[in-house]
Every structure is written in structure tokens, then in C-alpha cells.
Image 1 (cartoon, rainbow, N blue to C red):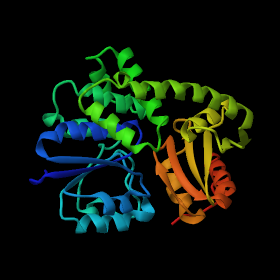
Image 2 (image 1 turned 45 degrees about the vertical axis):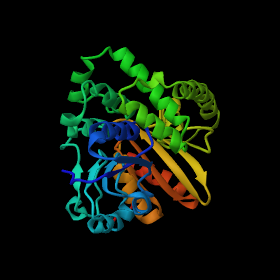
Image 3 (image 1 turned 180 degrees about the vertical axis):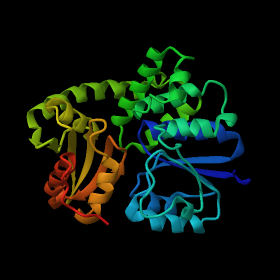
Image 4 (image 1 turned 30 degrees about the vertical axis):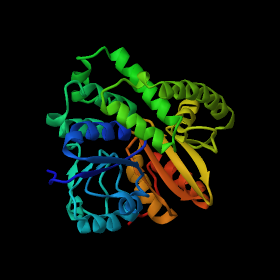
Length: 331
């Protein structure tokens, strides 16, 4: 799978699923490389970060392929001289077959809702020390992917109350250190030794602080949420846009919740939907083709980056899709 080399680069998403996946890779391959470096990136930034940081063999974990950048990424991969393994549970791009990337993709089987942590654990199972299923479980729980057959069986080996507590510490602690990449690398190293998240004091403190912040965020959303049709939204929440979107939907009983964070002349969005009412991943991939920006994720939880002037159109079209009378034709 990997040819002999001294350097390994891990490119990971910075949430709990990505951090756990990176830790599992590091634990599995530690003895095979003289140097293992970890960098955190995101779908839109992956091409530039790959060009800047990739050395030796590369493992990419929990990064969706951004459709507007997919052809550029495929070209970069085909030119690269080292081995590339790409482990991801997000839906594949619609505009280019995965075979054109020229790398080893590790993906869920059809209709499987596994997290990247679960996929990474299974892929490197034979190289991992004993009991690393517990580490993988933290990422599965943190990514709302805790209902798979593998997770249910793995939890039987542990006291699930402790596992969920540790996953909560990890999720909250990472949410409270979103752009602190050096700290996240420290968390990766900690987890790669199969140490509990709560044993890392700084992570535990950040988790406690974030719990207080989330309670304040809940009250803020309750005051500022707006409802248009079947969609509830907030703009500029003082905290996690993902949690704000969840609160917006839950507080209003809407089918979809949206939270928008201002970044210059764009909004960075997080969306949450009631199960089975809409495929947010496909909706955002198709919508951003003509309103601008990029988006995707999962059917019930997704994100996007769009021009501010397109926000109203996005809300209108989400409502149209929820009512089953979308008026637009997409490429």
C-alpha cells in the first residue's frame, strides 16, 4: 500500500472525526516512517495545502472533494510522486469519477453511514495496537455516525457512558480551539497513544468553557432566529455555526436550520435538516453551481460558502425543494 519512505504527511479535517482519523493513522504507521507531519485543511483549501505541505507518502482523512476544485485536485494527485491514500465518508463529486484521481480511495460501501474514523480504523486495523477501537469510537460519536453495525458491536467492549463522555470532551474541546492547529496536533499525538481526551487538561478546560458558551449561544439563537417558510436561520451567531443551525431548527420546529458566519463579501454556512426531508449535500452542490460558491457534506448536515447576495435565493430554493416544487433546472 505504501512504498518505503521516511516521511508521511497527514492532511486532516480539524473536527473530531478528522482529528481521530489522523491519530489512528499516526498510531498505525508510526514505526514505518521517520517523520510524520499533520496538517489541518478543508475541502476548498485542500489543493493549495496539498501543494504546500505534501511530502513523502500522503494520507488524507475526512476531507470532502470540493466539486469546483475537483479537476485541479485530480491533476495534482496524478503528478505527485508519492503514495496517496484518501479516506473519506462524504459523497463523491458529481462532476468527475473517482478513478480519474489516480489514488487509493477508502470509502463507505453503498448505503453505509460510517464516519472517517470508522473507515480509518478498519483500513489500518492490522497495524493498530490493541484497544484502538475506543479511539475510533470518539470520532464516530462526534460525527453523529454512531448507529452503524460496527459502532454498536464496538461499544459492547466498553462502558458506553464513559466513551460518550470522552467523545463529548473531545468535540467540545476542539470546537473551542477551532484555528489552533498546533494544539490540535497535540491532541492528535495524545489520542495516537490511546489516552483519554479527559486526561489532556487543556482540552478538558476548553470543553468546559465551550459548554458555557453553547448555553449562551442557545439563548442568542432563541432571540435572533428568523423563520422563512420551512427554513429557520440566524446570521452572525457568537459561536459554532453548526450548533447554531441545530438550535435554529430545533427551537422553531423547522425542517431545515441555517447559520451564517460573515467572511468578507461571503457567508460561510452550516445547515442541519430533519432526517429524510431533503438531501442537503446534493442540494448545495447543485445550487452553488448557479448562485456561486461551493457546498456539500451529508444529507442531514452540510456546509457552504456563498456570496452574501445569494443568501436570500438559497433560502427560497431550499423552501422550494422542501415543498417539492423547485423551479430551477441545474447542470
